[in-house]
Length: 241
Image 1 (tube, rainbow, N blue to C red):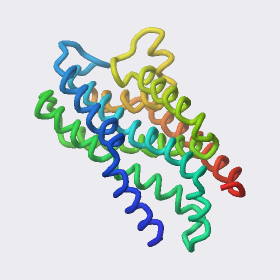
Image 2: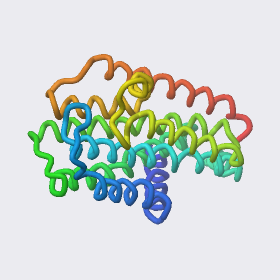
Image 3: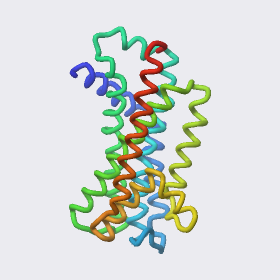
Image 4: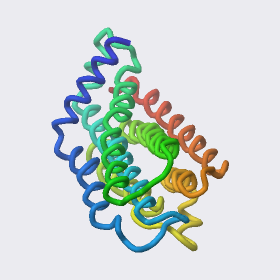
């Protein structure tokens, strides 16, 4: 376990110097929130400032856990880095565990910063337990997106992984309702995405203090699907990386 944590620490240090990570995980959500948060509207029954706070925090989590990992894993697999790690005393799953743990750590700043903006810039007010519940819900989403990143990163080569990553990222962002509240046919489609379920759980907590069980089940199902895909992807390439 010590080796895995050391690898995780190294991954975190590397990401802290990564401009792409800083821009898309922190700067973009903050910029969008500052521009659009004070829109005179609502989203899923709460003020737009509250809805957009949740949406941008989720956007940062999706970017940090999915975008940064998918392309990086694919490139490191091609470069032989994963093969090199297999020659060390590290456990066989150390690389994947380190990637997931790194995502769990490095998405926290995005959530905290956007939530602070929501409180002091968007003037979102609610009991402390609701703040915690929303933050934890979004943070748990990191596991879902990290699992998908592992699955795609292991199966796709660097030439094809980038367009696939961009397509999946924008699909989950748009049809998950991170940028604007969905309605009508778009919402019926969005209901099946994990990003929508994260946002809806959070806005339900803010607006009603309770959540729909179907959205919680949806998150569990998505995590199970992506985790299984990740396991199969890692095992199927075990002899080639």
